[in-house]
Length: 506
Image 1: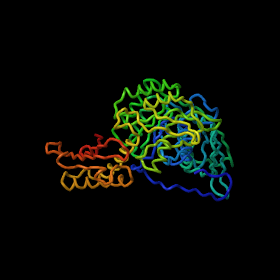
Image 2: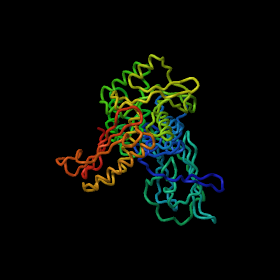
Image 3: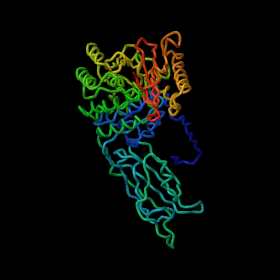
Image 4: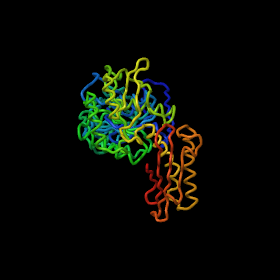
């Protein structure tokens, strides 16, 4: 852990790990560019401080430097609007890792005579980082030690005083910035005369560079997030800047085709920032909707225009998906997933990036784009709760998120029964498990009707499992009436010993 330069007593508290909770529908996953951090590996963060520790602070400098990443601001907007947990996958193109050579020679206690000091992750963030090492020979106070000070531009320094030489790489593994890797032969037997009492080395890391994310890098991140059971919201704040034209549309469709079979998450998309007029935004939305069917487009919602948010150096423009994800998470905790995330105030934003006249707002709304408006006395609010789907059965976000909640709950209830043999006892156990989930949703006000039998129906008998069906496969049909005035939801639950548990929306 990082130590302080002055003597004294310091306390460090490790937060209790609540573990992954697949039933939650307020967890978001962010795919995008960040200052530093592991590339392509998901990291779970539970606060803005966690995000800064793992991926670095907000970009500084001018309000809109060329190529500035928006994901750090989107993450801040998520937590400032009430989000509690997020997964983050850093997306990067070809990048180089900054490093420096350290040659201490045959220093007693070190396992090699030559070392490489490398940044913990690739990118230009560590270019010019300074690593100062101070060796102190053994005295009456104890064995030899090395003190390390790491200074990275734009980040707080790290100080590790008085580290013993044996196991030095393991002790420096607590650093957020650097790692120590042996790069030479082991030292020879210690010489007769003692070495110097103290030595110093001042190293500068060089060679770090960033590369613009490619479509392949985003596709890998899409695959990674699909394997995470917890996220229910997906945001890609930098996508519109990094990919254009057919690559952008193709990646969006790839994302929707990946999450659609899961039935448990919603993609929050942004209009590409290069499309400045309402007509261009409408044309982009129609291009996306023309390439997908109603069920596929039910997995996506778009919010526009972008937001002006405070930041180092002044306000800057940031896509709205991160802030909207935080608002959805906040309303989820306050009211439940079945409530429409609309007519609610956005926090951590000072203005809209564009002031759209009412006729343009109407065209955007008709194209399926959710509006963010500035209303007198309330500030910035989200208007409308629709997906991109033109199908009335899949158009409402509240409808989709209720399905996501039910699918997650039904999966947990039915998963232990996958390998049981088809029998009346199995069917009864399955109906009982699913009914308990739906009763909980009914009591929470998510379903319509004055009695449970008016709100849902669970069927697992010979009518849905005829004798000529495929062996080793059991079907359970679920009809649900949402509390809002929408169509019935029909889910088909299939237990197959060779395929596990499958949920199909009929």
